[in-house]
Length: 255
Image 1 (cartoon, one colour):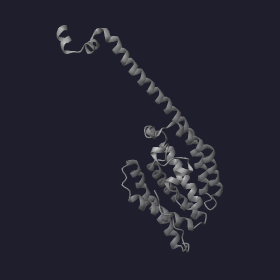
Image 2 (cartoon, one colour):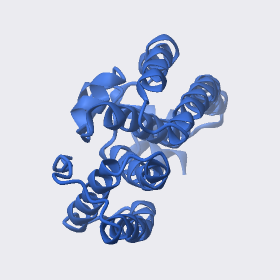
Image 3 (cartoon, one colour):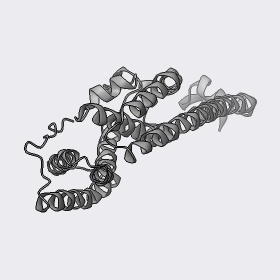
Image 4 (spheres, helix red, strand yellow):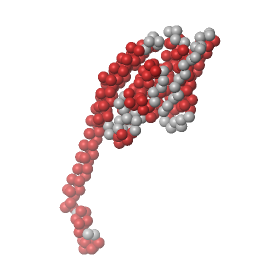
């Protein structure tokens, strides 16, 4: 039998199959799993660091949202609130964004996306809401990314994902709908017409998209109720003769 194997199997291969090399095979398997264990541990440590950073980032988000909620009680004078939000963005949010960017290579961005995606969606919304209160216009994705020190191109680093931006736009539409109602209470009759035009524009632009993200599609389904509420507000103003002579139009939505 040994002669038969020697004839058909090279000596080197035959020695690998022998009992004398069993320890070597075990060592190779051990080294392989040791390497895997180290990679798993490295990934665990990274994810723990990311969760800690995002936890602090969410605290800043809540602080900014609390500030912006005050604009609903005095919608005609939001300057102080938007300035306070920009201070939090500068002093707290951007350092946390940098910490995330330093830890996430472009090729693993989506591997850990579920950790920070919701925080980025809220950040996009907060940034757009503050800007809308100041300028009455929608910030496009590159502008939001610039405000947050994020990239736009996925290949260039830690970036603002397109769908995260779109979630922010939808959240903005819902928040502005509530803001329109409070503006009427404060005696600002022009703002609801501006917001109604904006929300309707957002709805029309989203209908042009072929959305494959189920969560985004479900979130978009809620937008029709925001459109209806805004239409009801401006209708009530119009029949009371409170329509402004030249209602402010919203900026076209840009992706």
